Amino acid sequence: MPDSQPRAIIHVDMDAFYASVEQLDHPEYRDRALIVGGLGPRGVVSAASYPARALGVHSAMPTGQARRLAPGAVFLKPRMARYREVSQQVFGIFKRYTPLVEGLSLDEAFLDVGGSLRLFGSREAIGARIRDDILAETGLAASVGMAHNKFLAKLASDAEKPSGFVSVPPDGVQRFLDPMPIRRLWGIGKRTEPRLRRLGVLTIGQLRRADPAALRDVLGNRTAHFLALARGEDDREVTPVRPDKSISHEITFDRDLVDTRAMRAELLVLSEAVMRRVRKQHLAAKTIHLKVRDARFRTATRSLTLRAPTSQTRGLFQVAAGLLERWLAEHRNTPVRLLGVGVSGFSEAIEPATGAPGLDAAVDAITGRFGDASLVRGLSLERRPRNRR
Image (cartoon, rainbow, N blue to C red; front, side, top):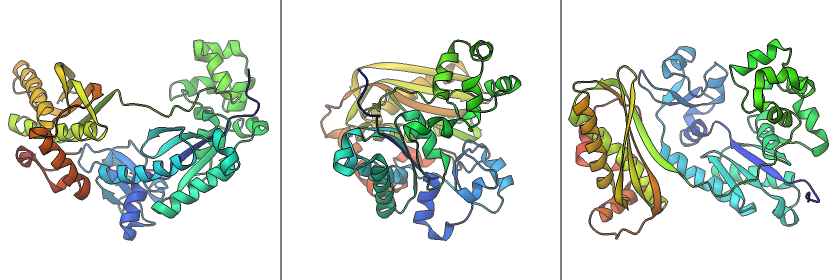
């Protein structure tokens, strides 16, 4: 049976989140082109301020290319612990208005506020309060999109960035969607878009009105799905809990590694980062994964399932190091370009806070208060400088 009234969905997307946090903490960088990402020759841009974007810089761009486009920009390494801290503040604001919060990343989420309308007013009123609370309590700007489904709310939040505030009424869906380029539809990528353009389909409105038979030659069995999106139809629910199926970290090296001890030092840092996140969620993991990419871009993965789950850094490191030793035995003197460590198979942690787990808890407390670089384990000191994390 259909609902008596449309759902009320809000999508909140923080504007240039990593870069904005850096400008918040460093006021001297405000209004400047600022780029956050790996700083080495193999680095990749994680975020760019809007002045940097105006110069053509965007996320996932190689840092070297970004330097050529914006030679006068400020380049900074990511500070993930700081970004997570601010993200927790933002998500705390979301949960004042509804328990139905589906986080997509540190800086964006869907909210179903249908059950909060009587308490806080219309979805527009709630969206405005959330935007104002974020600005007042974090000093950061957010773009807010409101609609009766997730697809439209997501497009609305992106329509007038930065500091956008767009609501799509049920009777204004086609006015909102029809002029948009077809690439704004989820799933229309760089390969599909040119083929649609050759059919004369450049906008969502043109796709909506096109002959389904002609579209099927390009879109195949996804034709009905894209036509539904072009009509603004999306029945997905906001899902509050999205537990991690796996947690991993990896490092790409500026220069390939051949020294085994240096590789072990990197594995220890990766193990610390992974297990800190595991412990923060009060979990333990049973399966450990290793990822190795050599200088010829060949990627190998190895895994081992433990008899009992663990949340200890030392346990993860010892297993990962053993997996690496096996790979090295099969690939003698092969330069390593990338190392990654991950875990999966989660359960609630039951380990006592003594011994190695007690050490982990102490390290977590210190790094949580003073930052990741405030305390390191001995072997980590042998890391070669200028690695991108």
